[in-house]
Structures are given as structure tokens and as C-alpha cells.
Amino acid sequence: MILESEEERHRKRTRDRTQKGERVRTRIKSGKSLPPNAMRGIVVSAAGPYWVVAPAPADPRAGSATVASEHLVLCMVSGTVDAPEVSTLVTVGDVVWYIVDTVASESEPATGSIVKVEERTTLLSRKAAGRARKEQVLVANVEQLAIVIAAAQPDYHRRLIDRYLIAADKGDLRPLIIVNKLDLVGGKLLEVILDDLRVYHETLNLDVYFVSTVTGQGLEELARGLSGTSTLFAGQSGVGKSSIINKLASTRLKVGEISELHNKGKHTTTGATVIPLDGGGTVVDSAGIREFAIWELDQQELPYYFEEFAPFAPACKFTMCTHTHEPGCAVKQAVDDGQIEEGRYISYTVLFDEIGQQP
Image 1 (cartoon, rainbow, N blue to C red):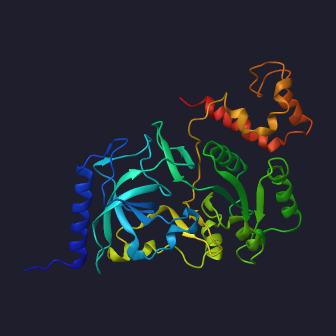
Image 2 (cartoon, rainbow, N blue to C red; image 1 turned 90 degrees about the horizontal axis):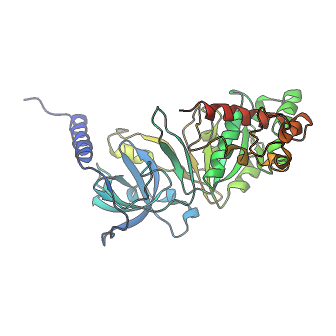
Image 3 (cartoon, one colour; image 1 turned 180 degrees about the vertical axis):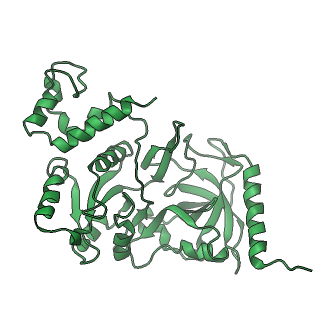
């Protein structure tokens, strides 16, 4: 007789749960009455096919991720759910209502079902990968978007900064910029970087923090800027988002303990994760990305996201000027005269052409 190993038994249980969840079709029904045993929580991470939900605190900025792991619940979304009509039904940061199906044991975590998703106050979304025109909401209900770039290794991408600024504007997020790895540059190269980023601080009035996780430079000032609020960290892979967070948060969200209960990592956490800060507030550490396609942006709308165009656009010769090729364009003249920063204008034209090539 061949005895089944604990790992094989775990895999079978996991497969059965997943298949059961796939068989139950999720339906959206607004105004559905909540079950009497429903509890309010915040989605703090994703773990395989599940969402990790923590009980919602009285003050959302207090840090829902500080709860002990035994209070976290692995929730699936199935059956009938009361949720806004959005393509991304649930995401990290969502305020949800859930019911506990099974309580935690020494070998298994608590599991539950999400029955309601509340309206989002803010969000960061992008066009989902692939040919289909579909919105992907990355994170919801945070107050700030920290665009993290590196002074070197990898070199920062100006176009990506400007894309994030538009997405923050569309999602009602307050943007700021963090320049990490300052220890890798100096002298004239540092002066070039400071000059290149001057437009964001002086013209767009954004907070720009220059930091180094190696020397500690700028971290205290950054901690003050993040204290008492919720902030999403976004940027390319390798810019040091997690390294910065590790310096500011002595206790990370112990979602890993959930994986431990599932036999050491069978449900690895993916994507964004909510983390409490030592000085109060929370940050959301998101996965690095190479490209960021903005959701629902057309050529007519684009100029309004470049606010420095506004003082000059009324003087354009043509009322419907696109600020790309028309004669008598006051915006292009302002670029030539140094009144509009050239790098920002290049970002505008790149996006304008990109939108025009979309099917």
C-alpha cells in the first residue's frame, strides 16, 4: 500500500478548492443584502487564486496590515457579488465585505468568500496586456502615487514618469517622485539629473525626494512625506521600491505566514501588497513593470494632462490645434522659446502618436 504524502494531500485539497471555485460562476448584483455574519475588510494582497483580506480598522490609514496572521482570511470571489460594474472585480486596496467559511487551524488558514466590493475612491489602472481593450485596476483606495525611479542602474525613463502622472490624475491620486540610488551618481552627472527633473518640482509643483538606501540620504524627509497617509509605490523593476520600504517599515505584512500554513508557499503572494509604516500610514509595494499603457485616453483629451500648455493654447491659430504639426501653434512656439520644457513636450508627442496608432 502506497501512503499519500502530506504534500500530495495538500495539492489535492488545493486543486479541489480551485476547481470548485471555477465551477461557481460569479455574478454581479447591485444592492444585494449583506448576510448578517458579513464583516468589513481590506484586500491586502493576492495569494494564488485567493485574495488576502484583513479586518478593516476604524481609521483606514492606521494600517490594516498590522493585524496578526491568524486574523487574515483567504477569500475567493464566487456566487453573487455586490460590486461596481468594473472589469477588475477585486484588487488590492479594495474595501470589501466577506464571510468566513472555515476557521483557521494549525495546518490551514481561515478561508472565506467576498460578497460585496465598495465603491473605489481612487485607483491606478492601465490597459490590460493583450489585444483586448480591457481596463486592469492595479490598486484602489490609496491617496498618493509615488513614482519611483533610479538615478542609475537602471537609468530612469522620463516617458514613464509622464505616463504615471496622467494615470494618477485620471485616478484622483496625488503624485510624487522618488529618485533612488543617489549614491551611484555624483558631480556633473548628478547636476544633469537634477536639471532634467527640475520641471516636475518647479513647474508642476510635485514633491521630489532624492534618496539612497545605502547611505540613508533623504530617507527621513521621505518618511515624513509618507506618514499618516496611504501611498502606492510604482515604477520599473530594479529601481529599489522594496529596498526603500524595508528601510521605512520594520514590520512587513506577514502574508508569508499564510503561505507557510499552506505548506510553505503553495499560494505565493503576487502583485501588490499593503505594508504598514513605522511612522504611521501604509504603502503598497507593487510589481515592477516595463510598459504602462494608459486606459481610455484619446488625442483630444491628452493636452489637458499637460497643464503647462494651458497658458499658451488659447493663442494657437487653430481652435482644434493638436500642438503637433499646425502652423501658428503657440504651444510649439513656447517650447522653442524655452517656456515649456522640451522633454515634457516630447512625451506629449510620443503619446499623441501612440494613441493615433491604436485600433
